[in-house]
Length: 131
Image (cartoon, rainbow, N blue to C red; front, side, top):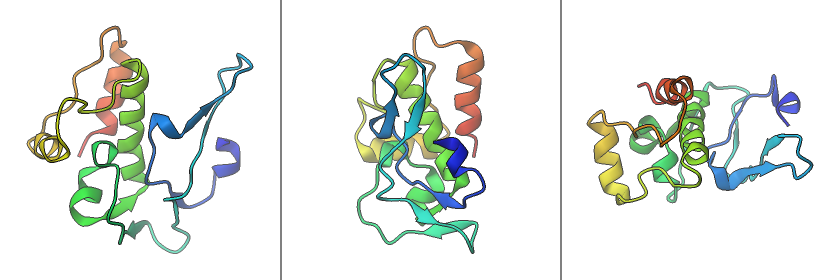
C-alpha cells in the first residue's frame, strides 16, 4: 500500500500490470506486488544492477544501457503500466522484439496513445517517458 511505502527509499525494478493487485471489493484499490527485484536505496539515489534478466519493454533506457535503477526508472515503468491498462492488456511494444523496442526508444520513439485513452492520461504517460 502506498501509505506504507511513503518515506521509504527503494526501487521496485519490475513495475508492470502483472505485478499490480486489484481489490475485488469494487473499491478501486490497487497495490504493487512482487518485490523480488526491489532494492533498498537508503544510502544512495540509485542502484546498479548485476541482474542478467530484466523486463526490457518496461525498463527505462538508463537501466537498460547502464543497469542504473532509480525512482526515475520506476516512473518510466509506471508509464508502461498505464499503457497496459489503457490498451486493455496490450504489452508495451507487443509486436516488436526486445532489441527492436530498445532501438525504437533510443531513437526517440514513444508508444502512441491507446484507442480511447484520454489526452491528459497520455500526456502523463509521455511525462513518464521523458528522458
